[in-house]
Length: 274
Length: 253
Image 1 (cartoon, rainbow over the protein chains, first blue to last red):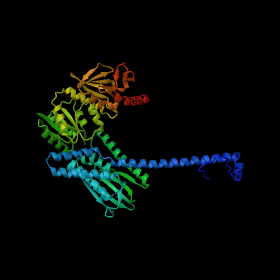
Image 2 (image 1 turned 30 degrees about the vertical axis):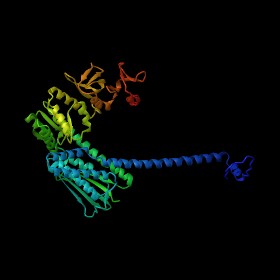
Image 3 (image 1 turned 90 degrees about the vertical axis):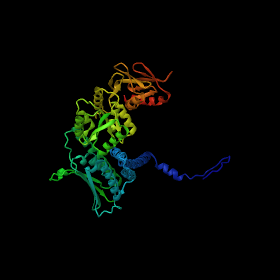
Image 4 (image 1 turned 120 degrees about the vertical axis):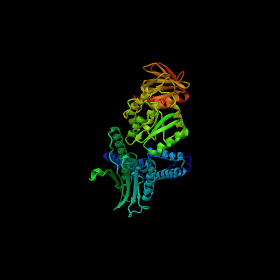
């Protein structure tokens, strides 16, 4: 019924009230009370569900943001010491080396920025990032350490993807305050292995406990290790939450596993293929 | 000619500094280099340099550990570091000279020029002691601050300072427990140092410890009244910020 304009006067609207009146009659006493309770109950559960849903959505958003934040952290020691090494080539009047390392450094920064935008990158991409990073580190530490990166022939490096830079904190640790200072020549071996529906990403170094009586230094080293562990495990936890897959990390002290005096640490990431 | 040694675990960093000194500071002669705490300590003992360029993070300890090995430090030192967020605040408070890597030539030149000032051995040790105290991990923010007056060097607790007042390029310090002193540093530098830990620049020439503020009076003039009754002007642009800061402090206490 629509009234576009109202004329002066008296109107009569015949309305059939028989249906309404029947209902009103039955809605008395306890029935009415129940109806109100049920309606209120429904409204309450409904809004609760909506709130929960929204909360979960935001929680997920936060997890994702956290995830990106954890990824983009670059060790400032690495950044500034690499720049110092480049500065050295400039002063040595070696423009070719300076330019070479300068562009490697730029490439690495670009890759890391790119990686931070993505949840997964190809193994080829990860290998490129690691190689650039380790080569720049060699510029600082000279021949104090060597590294190898091997990719299982069963892996299609262009198509198999993994979360970017998972092992970064551990590799950083091994170089900045681990194997390279042990007197013996340090080594870092990185392997990508296909095992069933998982990719194993292994990082092995030959660094050992510091033969130092300096309690402060020992404490500092422990702190860095704990920090690296936390950075990686936080990321894995977030990955599990977002993608609902079993991402795992294991750390093995090689001195305890092997008897023949081998020292070092082996870190194994188990990454389900998506 | 000033004799110097460089102690840093990374060869490129030592080389870069060495080349830069040759280039920009020809009156500094590098007479030796070392790559860790142990060899650095021996180098200083054998070569007796006038100045030591010292890295903090080294494989067998820190630059502070090295300095701690000497019962008294009878050489000048300049800390050279890539990144030591926690320490930089402490360096400023303890008036320790430091350079950040990669080294800026201008900063290097300035640091080397400062070496020409005659400094008593006692003063160097006092600064280092203050640094060690400030750098303790339990201390959230540096507690002690080094102040240079005309005749001496003072170590004071941050909480003892009521306020600072600018006198051209000098700063007058007012304390809760001792007479005022005139310090030969600009107020701006103390503003940078102290503002993160409870001080407020109410006015171009006044820096106030908010713990000593009794109230903030807006009429007839905009001033803060300190516990001892002194009134300090608050400039127009600072009024709003001061109000919010004081509210925050009240809520905490």
